[in-house]
Amino acid sequence: MKKKITAFVFIIVSVLSSGAYAEPGYAPVDIQATLFIKLFIFNNDLNKGKDITIHVINSPEFAAEIRKSVGKKIGKSKLISVSEADSLPSEKPSVIYLGNPAMLKEALEYTRKKEVLSITGIPELIEKGVTLGIGVVDKKPKIFFNVSSSEREDMDWNPVILKISTILK
Image: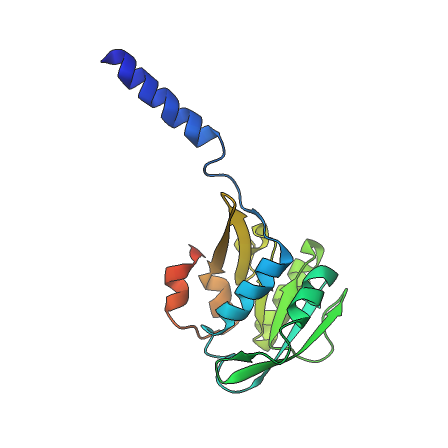
């Protein structure tokens, strides 16, 4: 019996240290783009009939992928344009995708001041203040949602987002 318990403990320790609870990795941009478009339906500020614009900072691959969704309906709204630059936009977009961690502070100041949704494909940036992110855990896409950041950007969400996301506060 003692050998069985020791073996069981060894297996549990091995599983826990093997990466079963590993840090999230990066999701491919096609998966990110598809999921973000689907997630926007849960944002009551985005889906109520206004045109949606996305500004992408430092991620040409994501910008190219999300552009494939221009013209797509999101609730009562429609994605009408995607801009891309190394810096913040000159005109207020609906959403900012942050692809450069070095721009985090500036981007968050902007999104909070102008009430713009911040999103990213860099999972560690969600803990640092980006509202919505996509990562990969155990080879599966995972949605991350930062509640306090969402409140600071004054976003209104359907409560379903809380059920389908990993919540950070």
